[in-house]
Length: 249
Ligand code: NAI
View 1 (cartoon, rainbow, N blue to C red):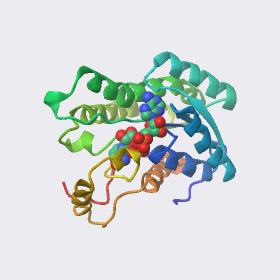
View 2 (spheres, rainbow, N blue to C red):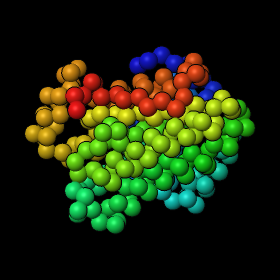
View 3 (cartoon, helix red, strand yellow):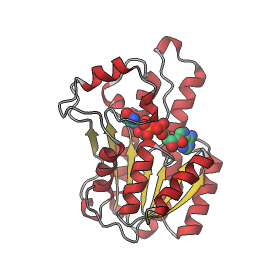
């Protein structure tokens, strides 16, 4: 793990129940941050948070659907009441509803846009005032290479992630003068529950195109998050970092 000292920092991570989000929450906690973990599945979220605490980290669970404006605002109120302020926001919660464009239903479109893009906006808006007040902040959005290059069967998902990239670039311009950076990470293929549903032959096809010779892990993405979260990365903002093992498109 990349060594970054986040002692005293307060972080929020969405979708921290499992996969990349859990990897990020663990890495932030190991670096000394107090972590507010947001997820939708209460039991799984509490188990994941307990794991972080058992490892010596400081973390608390908040059940919240990031696409629900009222729920996000209520959760932000609770987080701010518990921790006093927020310094680092990681918008990681995301879903897929993959289908060829001609068969994407309104619901499949809206679900993906609402969680991935609207959720990123709602969470950012809910915590940005706290960061503005303390004149220090790190916003790190988990996008995807699908948002950069597109991916067959993911018109809704790639549109949502391209939206996250545009959103990140814009808020970096709005918030820079408050010492708040905003950056996005575009993971390539990472082994999580999200990708576990894919056919092994499809996964092998991707692996064959990764020069470093392996599928990514949540820790690979967490390390990039630690760089952007670091007090020492204050001159890096509005950037989109691809973390994909060099995947050949
Ligand atoms: P995952 O499906 O394993 O975990 C997603 C997390 O988001 C879960 O904790 C889930 O509870 C949470 N979540 C889903 N909907 C939510 C909602 N409405 N409100 C709050 N939390 C919600 O997914 P994975 O693979 O860990 O992905 C994490 C992020 O990384 C996502 O944004 C995904 O799009 C992105 N990503 C993943 C890649 C991969 O290969 N796994 C590649 C590129 C991007």
